[in-house]
Length: 109
Length: 119
Image (cartoon, rainbow over all chains, first blue to last red; front, side):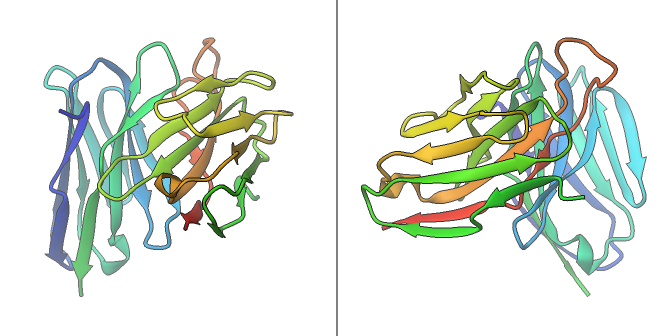
């Protein structure tokens, strides 16, 4: 069993829909990262959170430490949101990240 | 404002050839990382460097060597390329969380990747 698991693996939705991507982890962490990988391959950090909730524009990330679960939400989804979304767990005591396999999101106009 | 720059972007090698992937960051970060990304798998850490002059093995170091000659640059070398090393390679950098500093919980900044094919 991977230490970090994401669901779903693939998600296709219509423009405007509310999107939820889930991430579960099985290890103690100091922070949980959400990253976006563009179709061209570049990776951008979206959020890093260790508790509660963070919001940036139409993106919202939440984390429940007790349940070892995080979600990434996208409101009013747009075709430009089409990308692979990756969660990664930062381990206690070091800089290392363990990555999920990603969720491929496709938003249809 | 370049951030993390990787070269080359694409490379095709024959089995047994050697090559070095270059990575440079201009954000004055201490920590630098090399990852590989393969279909159906998450990014996996090959090597990392917590500071200039120090390097440590990650999850999949076999077949690779690294060099951190200065704070800006962290190179990854394949001494004798094998088809199993066909992958997309990413370099990243970050301000370290440890020792504790005012730069707590900083994200990693990624390069655009190098797509490497070994025939």
